[in-house]
Image (cartoon, rainbow, N blue to C red; front, side, top):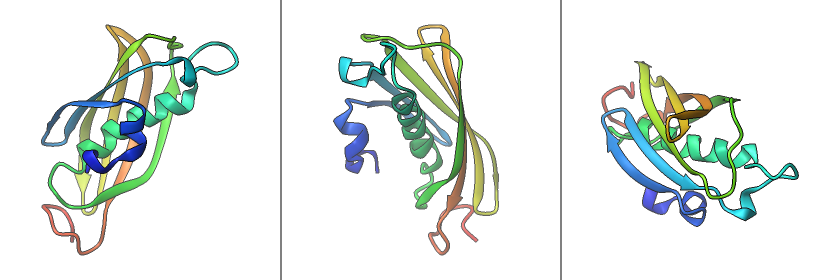
Length: 129
């Protein structure tokens, strides 16, 4: 799925790790990602977190999409910052799931993201009934 993600690949996002319900993605903030304040535009931070979330919720092979997501911006990111987004499954129930994603610059928290997933009906996999 990640290999076909044109948006994430165009931004240079790298998938560093993927496992059962977890994923880690990396992105370096470029000049074209800055807002009028000279910091990373929140949309790019959301996209990084959403990419890790998408990878984590699709680890069992059943096509799964976002049902919703929220993000809290904690600190600004700047040009040249290497950001890591670590997604972790928190709960799976029926065709739904809850995932938390932490976006870090080194040890510093930049954003917290919570995604809600939905496995497509009839998609198979361990929870698609």
